Length: 327
Image: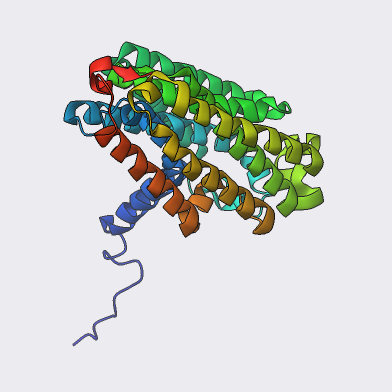
């Protein structure tokens, strides 16, 4: 009687579909991380018009705004793929960016290109179906970010201004998606707030990487800490002014005259963020700051609750729903 041989390492168990399934799962996981879902909170600016038009609890409008949020997240994800494709060699020299799926070799560049076109063009086309103006805003955002990836991120100041313009487009697109007008002051506030975060991020990149900062992001050679500190001081003031004027002088404020009560929450949030940048060394990744700091989270939550309560109970004359927008 022959002695049975132990299963070989090359037996049918190893040739089963399981390893293939694992590889597919790894690719999907890598693709998911490459489109940076952690950055999705940036796209919450799409909801700005919904909140300040007093329509947050209107089911149809909320559904449209949520669809806009998801489409903006898809298109923004395509831009992250393009950026990582173009910066793959620089990212491999960065202490943390080298772990990104494309830089680490986990996501093939060919597949990343395909997903860039699918998410970018597909998301924009779906946006046009939701609302033509929303779709055009998505297309403008995509074009602007492509220009950023290829050229604008290498031009001092325009690199930060381009990113800030993306936030203005997010805010405006939310109004187009639900067909309401949005105040120019809110658009200016979105722009100034994004500049504030952008200059803070550049500052922390310089602080953390020191003399080697230019090796991973060449534009950092054009910045200095004193210059960035001045820029942060300017845009901090403008951020607070824009929101304060909106809360007192806008059509929304005329309808809800106590909206100014929300200003202290904004000021505290801005001051708290400055504290985290200058005393804790945070700010290199604004999304991580928001996820880590409880005090900042509480300030945003209290601001949001105050806005909702004021829109519910502090009405004069026609409601914002009757007026048709966040003006």
